[in-house]
Length: 452
Ligand SMILES: Cc1cc2nc3c(=O)[nH]c(=O)nc-3n(C[C@H](O)[C@H](O)[C@H](O)COP(=O)(O)OP(=O)(O)OC[C@H]3O[C@@H](n4cnc5c(N)ncnc54)[C@H](O)[C@@H]3O)c2cc1C
Image (cartoon, rainbow, N blue to C red; front, side):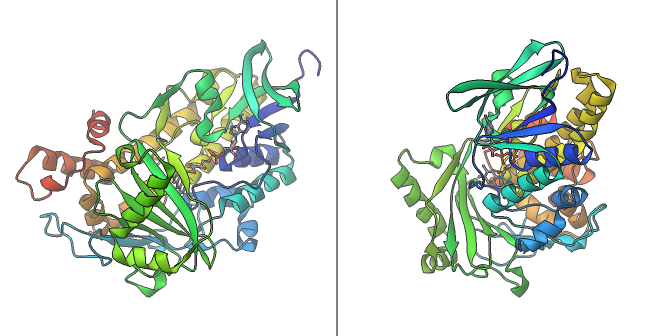
C-alpha cells in the first residue's frame, strides 16, 4: 500500500444480504471492493421470508437463476389468521367483525421492474452463502472468519482503516469508503454512538424449525401451502410466523413483548408452547410434527440511527435501521439499501467527493421508506382490525398490497397510510367507537410521534 493508494476502493463489513448485494453491485460495476465476514458461511440466521421488492434487486444482480436452481419455495402470497379461528370474515368500518383474518396474492398488483408473480422463502444459511459466492464470482474479494473490531476513521486524509485480527495478529485494510453491513451488531453505529434504541417496540421472538408440519392446518384455501402465515394469538401484541423452508420443513416463531418473555430458557420454551396452545389447531399440528432445531431467540431488536451516512461511510441493512419484522421486510430493506446506495458510492469514487453529502440521496430515500414501514407497522399494532379491514376493502386492497410488496420508497407517505392513520386517530378520540376497545397499547407513543 502506498501513501495515497488504499488496499480497496470500498471495504464492506458483513456478508449478510446487505453486504453481499452491495459487494455484487460494486463488483459488477468494476469497483475494487472487499467484504469481511466474521462467520464461516453457511451460518443460521432469522428472517426467512422475502417480500417481492427483493426480486428487483436479485434480478438486477442476475441472481434469479441461482434462486431457481436452489429450489427455494416460491411465495405467492400471505395470510393472516384470526385469533379465534382460521377463516377470513366480512369486514366493514363499523367494526362489526372484531376478529378478522385476511389473505393476499402478490399477482393482484403489477409491480414495476418485477416480472415474477411470486417471491421466495429462504433457508438463510443457504441463501446468504449463495449470494456471498455470487458477489465473489462477480469480482468482489471475500474474507470469511474475519471479525472486524473497528474502523479508524482518521487514519489518513485519503482513506479509512478497517481493523481486524488474523490469529493473534492485529491487521488492517485501508479503503476510500467503508460500508457497514454488520447487521444488528451495528458496528459503526455503536462506534460512532449513532444508535438509538426504539422506546416503543421491545419485541422478543423464539423460533425453530419443524419437519412434517401440516401447513394447511389453519388455511381456508387449498392453494395456501407456500404462503407465509401470520397467526394472531389472543394475547396482546403476540403473533406466530409460519414460513416454508423446504417441502418438508417449516419455520415457526412466536413474537411477543419483552414483558411476556420469562427469565429462564426453560420457561421461554414453555411460553412458546403456551402461546401456540392458545390456537388449538396450531398446537395440535405442531405436536404432530417433529422439531428439528433447538429453539433460538432474538430480543429487543428495534432501533434507529441518528445518521446512516458520514464522511467516507455508509450504513446499510440492519446496520442502518431495524423495524419490527411483522411484514417480513428486513431482507428486502437490506437488498434495497444496496440498490439505492451503490450509485452514490460509485459517483463518490469518480468525483473524489467522499463527504457525507455525497450519500444524501441514499440517506433520504432510505429514511422515506423506513418511515413508511414504521408508520404502517405502528398502525398495524395500534389497531389490528384496521389492517385486515383495509385489505378486504376493494377501495384500498391494491394500495395495501403495494406496501406489502415492499414498494414504499417513492412517496413521502402513501395515501392509504394517511387514511389509515386518520381512522386510528378518530378511533382514539372516540371512546364510543366500536373499535376503541380494540386499540393496542404497544405503539401509542410511536404513533403520536410519527403523526407529528
Ligand atoms: C424475529 C425476527 C424475524 C424476522 N423475520 C424476517 C422475515 O421474515 N423476513 C425478512 O426479510 N426479514 C426478517 N427479519 C429481519 C432480517 O433478519 C434482517 O433484516 C436481515 O437479515 C438483514 O440483513 P443484513 O445483511 O443487514 O444483516 P445480517 O443478515 O444480520 O448480516 C450481517 C452479517 O454481518 C456479520 N458481522 C457482524 N459483525 C461483524 C463484524 N464485526 N465483522 C465482520 N462481520 C460481521 C454477521 O456475521 C452477519 O453475517 C427478522 C428479524 C427478526 C429479529
